[in-house]
Length: 134
Image 1 (cartoon, rainbow, N blue to C red):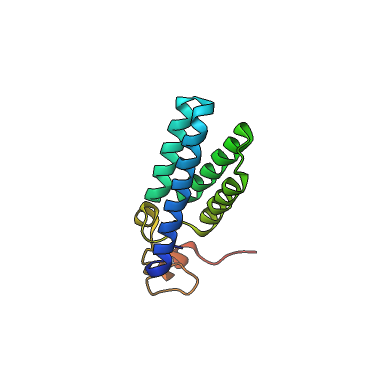
Image 2: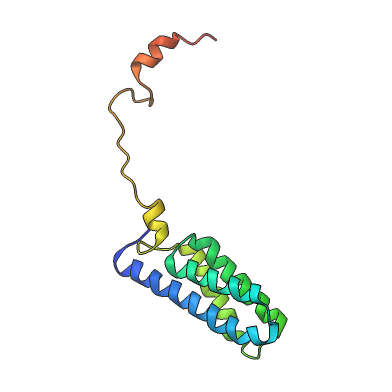
């Protein structure tokens, strides 16, 4: 879920690309929309995606913001915005990678299964319950 090495570096670059296009498109459309809340949403979601914090949700939110800006402003360069929305969806499906806050919070963990009953419980606990009656 959190690939490292070249794949993790590529995911980091994809996160930076999604955030940069969001900020670039959002600030160019900000002049026509003139809303501080929209600018705040753009900056916070871009920072979240760059840091890799809740990346699937942040990247979908970035894509929705860009789609909304495209519909509201009717930009001439709609292909550019459409491709950045596709990048946002790809990032949401791929995940954040190893170089992210998500990997630090929810990263790989080592599970140690104690030896014992193959059914998953301890034999002492099964003996305390007694046989199951039909």
